[in-house]
Image 1 (cartoon, rainbow, N blue to C red):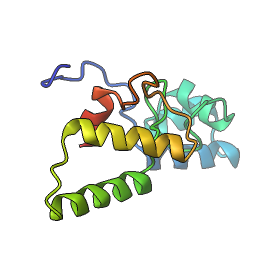
Image 2: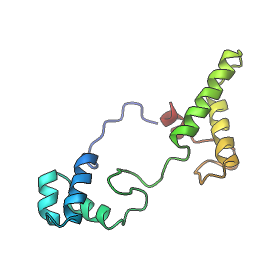
Image 3: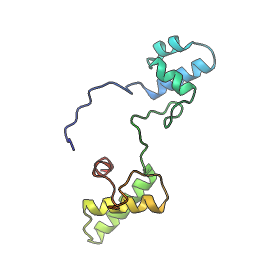
Image 4: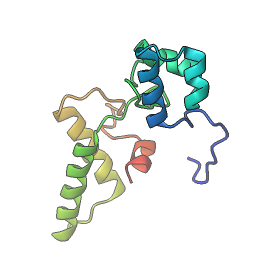
Length: 132
């Protein structure tokens, strides 16, 4: 895993508020696709895709890069962090492997669609790195 990754592209660099304004302008027929994309500085193809709801994960003005959605939402992540902090307060040493096991078990118990390793019953190391 690379710890000093530098992004090499400007994909997804548009502003979500500008996308919302562009979607409203196109929906109200105040502007066409090209004029709205230039005026609000959002990509025309992305504007069309968002307006026609052809995105698999991103809806409306929301941005999403990559193939997969996160398994644990913000609330579940916060609950897991609180649980780990409670364990730490009781002097149970929580290792990185413990965190990965707890994340896997939480995903399975909540019956969430996940990309975790079922044979090792662990969350991926990359997922752990993003979790921190």
